[in-house]
Length: 125
Image 1 (cartoon, rainbow, N blue to C red):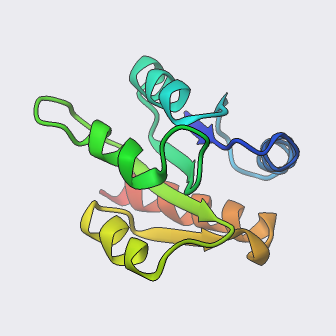
Image 2: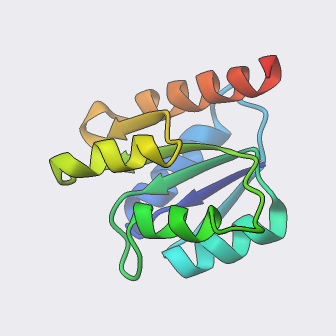
Image 3: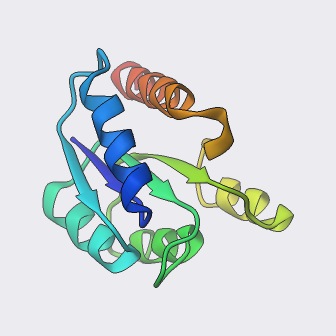
């Protein structure tokens, strides 16, 4: 199960289609803002979260802070997708456990490949 949190409807649609047409055997749940993303993540307990850095209500670090609150259990790989973010954000996200940050300019195949690697890591773990 994968939760994709992305506020750009065109990018979200294209990404979901790319994932569905890839060889990744995953079910995709979509959310268009941070609060809905948190609700979906809590509801479906995904193994992978693809999180846009900039959302209309919360940014990626704010979503992650809520997911990492004491008493909550986050058992998912997180990939942050961004069109650009502050330099300090990279270190902050890494400190929060994000292993992969993909720039949207790298294209959809880069996101799918990052997902493939993340799912592989989960199988090994």
